[in-house]
Image (cartoon, rainbow, N blue to C red):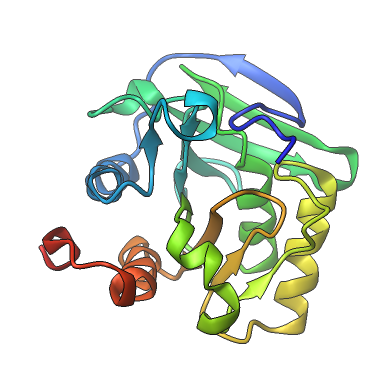
Length: 215
């Protein structure tokens, strides 16, 4: 892989501000810590050049613009605990222009554009989760997952187009896509945060004996 993990590739119109005040952040953080314990989100010197990986977002219904969502900040993977000071609010995006608008105490994750496309395409979706899991990524075909074109890198307009293409074609399994050109990258979504994260747990269950899967 020639890409650099965790680098924002879209044009970002960012307004620096104070810590966000949205109840969704507490639920996100509970799941983020659980996924960290499973090695699906975080930061590891031995993986991806030591940069952070994985992110979670949740749609904001009120207050906030239509289609807005909160998402973990860029390069926060090393943090064991986070609060509202580590999340960004995405308020608008235009994948064709490779442009995204956000505000908050930190810039949004480098995968924010992909999250935005899913929210815009599927109004029933309330949460999107991006993890890095070699087991799922290596066995995507056996698991019946849709896979993006390996030539397409994360965080680009081409990735947004790939996600739209796969959604329009209807997924062969669940709400999960393996990102063919993004090493170990998997993205899933659900009508609730629990639904999205439990889908991930069900996918990794055949390859893991980790007790935290059931805790």
